[in-house]
Image (cartoon, rainbow over all chains, first blue to last red; front, side, top):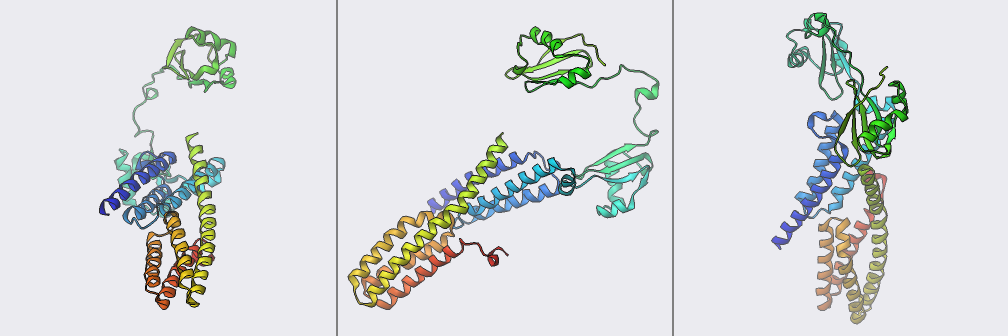
Length: 241
Length: 126
């Protein structure tokens, strides 16, 4: 009889492990640091829901599975709404808080997010700011991390500071996205779909539909990854706008 | 795509859980109550042979449905119902009218309870 209980627990553990693993993967969060506060709460709820049928074999497995599936569906729904509406996104995920604005600590914002000056200074030190005087802007992002923009005389040296003019970087153009030719991107690069056929042919690709991604970078190199295959590259001559 | 499939599966499981248990338990409860009524009437008329037939039918039915019940209800409740049916069998063998009716009543109240919790009520939600 004891063996049966242990076996029941073993099988239940496997089932719940698979369900939790699937749900967590589908929720799309990989690290604790990626989690919004609400996501963290959901994670804890899911863990607690799994606990009851695991510790008590008298509790039907569905008592744990049903609320877990419900939480998963609600989260999927919330994510869908957040994607569709900026207001809903702000409501569900929060909004970034500007805690230092033009070198001035925004006391009201600190109060709103319940952050003390000491906490802020500690976060700034973590970002390499030795004093508040070095910071132009500081923003607490929705996941709780701090983004810092240093004052111009305190930030790291750039080529512009040295009056060096490096070659202008060009935004890489996504020319084919999952088999679909991005005509708008081609136009912006001063090209058309006929131009694209030649480099693709050089790589042995006849149809754009067979390409997963094609990217044109500033060094006039076209990177192409077929839907089944490795990333290929070919030098091209493109009139870049 | 995987997410969409998972969402569809989750919705199907939830729909199943909302539809199947109440239907199954409702039908089972009706059958049990009919058998219980027959057993009560028979034993009140001191017809122990008919009572034994009704009990046998109830015992077999409940044992058949026990596993499905355990999928959706607290196992302790179902075990208590099983024990009550077992004790009713002993009372039947000993022809103890009071104990037989009492044990079947216990069984009936447990079945009524698990059937009731399958129905949503505002009190239960809050």
